[in-house]
Image (cartoon, rainbow, N blue to C red; front, side, top):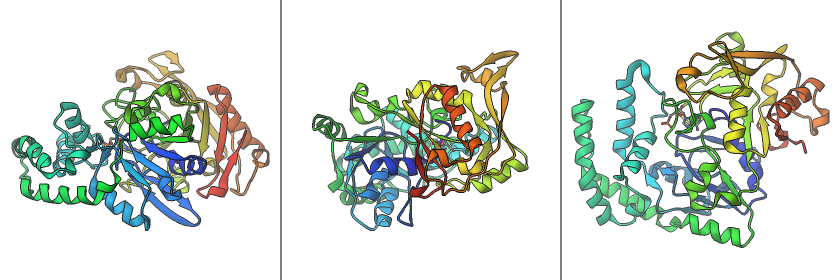
Length: 411
Ligand code: IMP
């Protein structure tokens, strides 16, 4: 519901247990999900969290795949995943990573702070209709033909715009990427058809998002966004299933706010308290290791996220990280040029100027061993109820630590 890194890995793993299928609908290995199961930590970037539990897990057409990363993740898993990859999914090619790094470097002060994984250039090629898809890795003649068209253009851009010599030949790329295709061939699956069949068979399906609402290419803090559609309605388009079939939308929100990379962040804490929360919450990127920017909970973001995603319930994570802070500020509205607003502005020129209006709530203390909502410190309960009241959406899950046992079902 915010800028990603809300702790989706843990929540999706939790929900995956009761699901027959887990689908990922967008993004690529810019995401990072940490899942702790039976004392073992899994750091996943591409694989849906469901694979850890052996669930049928699918990467939909809207996902972008770095095949080397996917193969590494499969081997780190230590067992063969029950995985399906839609042949329509686009492939992150070596020149995408070069373009990402070099275009960021050229932007200087205006850098987006991308993860450097080639995500933006890959989605750009998809939109330009010059992308390489998973199906192309399965047919080396097709791959070679496509690369003959696209590679000379990428080489020219790298050389003449960025002054960089692209070091890989067409032959090398065809050989390397066809080899990835051979290893991944067994996972080819029409995810959109599989979801239709699963719906018909009344199976339980979990659609797992990545990134966050305000990194959405349409509704995020553009241009400080990713290139996919992380919001829940993006699931239908990214997998190919009728959005109207969605029964529940669980919005994962952190009890405070964090952001990696550049872009507006109204409630950012630039003082010692920010450092304290960063350390307490281990707020360092799973993907890049970068320290995350940290700030107070922002109800303006959450209100807008609740609306855009159509959330029916909320999983509030990392409540324990706020434990011991004497009093807590929560942003309830923005003052944008003297005008009070409860919704995130549509115009970035307005958003950049907004100042948060805070309400102070009592601090609380959490041990992480509370098993029921009613066992939580009274002020912690009040904090959660405040979020519910402000959003008009129930909080169904409260997370008080990284372990599965530190998950309180509130309903
Ligand atoms: P890109 O997706 O690598 O192009 O990065 C664009 C922006 O999205 C940067 O600010 C990244 O830090 C941010 N971003 C992308 N994926 C994630 C994520 O999974 N969690 C948090 N931030 C992300």
